[in-house]
Amino acid sequence: MSEQTTETRYSVVHNDEEQYSLWAEGRPLPAGWHRTDFSGGREECLAHIDAVWTDMRPKSLRLAMGEN
Image (cartoon, rainbow, N blue to C red):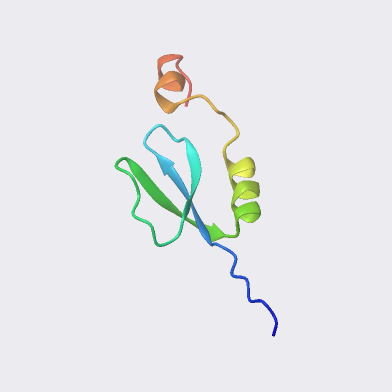
């Protein structure tokens, strides 16, 4: 009999400071975090985060420095 494996699916999430993370689908999000429209396997989601989160500084710091 073959062993069946199920890959955990994740959602890419972000907070109000525009910081990103991945979160296992089906789990409730912590307060202050919001789902994006991207989901998939772990490596897929991490690659997406690498592509979209190009400035690691929190939004409040960027605004304080006069940047968007």
